[in-house]
Amino acid sequence: MTRDEILRTVDHTLLDPCATWDEIRQICDDAVTYGTASVCIPAAYVKKAKEYVGDQMAICTVIGFSNGYSTTETKVFETRDAIQNGADEIDMVIHIGALKDGRYDTVKEEICKIKEACGSHILKVIIETCLLTEEEKIKMCQIVTEAGADFIKTSTGFSTRGATPEDVALFKAHVGPEVQIKAAGGISSFEDAERFLDLGANRLGTSRLVKIMKEKQK
Image (cartoon, rainbow, N blue to C red; front, side, top):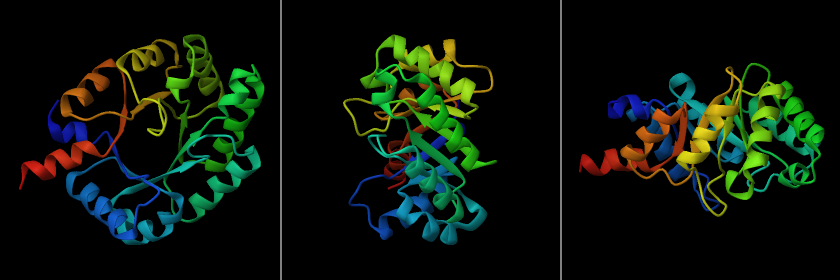
């Protein structure tokens, strides 16, 4: 794959709690320049960012971030608010404790409600693979498929580790044919990116690839 092709799969991401508007505006500019799939930013900046980029770039934001243990009602409100403010894509964090309790219907119902709130907008479900057993990861592939979400996503990037090739391969083997895969966290080179894409990822959550392109042009 060419670097341009890889960049078209990237959600160019800035979720640092200290992120300023100037920094958000810069990643929006960079995303447009390098043709990424979207920018993934905190919900507080969605409205301003969408007004800034218009139709030039998709705006993605995160819900229940980063621990996932907000109530379902809170997550649904966050989702509706984000979409009203101009978000094109939603990345939600599951309630990991509910999964570990074996309350699979609760986890599925929450995803279904958030998907309903999304309407035609893309929903990606973050399951935080580094905190799960292999059995739990496989179960989440089933739940995400049954709930009708668009993507299953490996990681928030704020826990003990990010995406691994093994997790992406596991997703590919167990999700339904309509569910796409997002690898996020720890993708630091174009070689890493291409490996994840070859294993079945459709999107990549990273800021590093655009930084590499900018450094190359200095």
